[in-house]
Length: 170
Image (cartoon, rainbow, N blue to C red):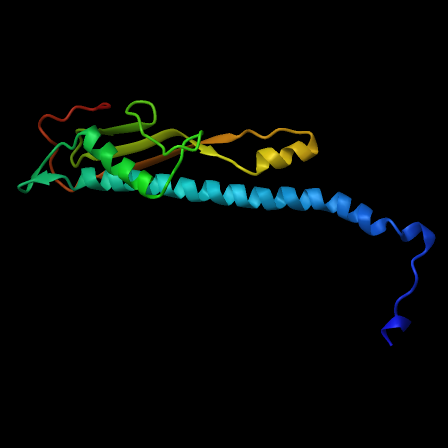
């Protein structure tokens, strides 16, 4: 019964399937690689944003005996670094990412009442794995890395500014 619906292929149609696969497969690979790489970039951006939030939250709640305390950039950076390490964020070479004060990490608070705290991660390299390799199929090149940034601003939970507070990076 099924044989009645099949017709024999004509002489010019025998290579159509191979040709169609040869045309469509690279495009499907490119789309799949793009979805995977962009998904990983989105995940890494969320981890960096959450890490900056954790640092800003710790600085906003910092008190000693109920009195507000100026949280050092080193203490905030340690909290952010612990969060990033816990989620396995890597640098360009595949090693665990290490923050550096002044280049990839920035923390400050202003003297307004209440104080605003800023934690910013700058130029964090995120490595793409699939798109640069798939790009070779199209005789093109894709950059291996994308730099990500994350910034969080929070208002301190204390109501008056610290007497020794000065704006700027620490």
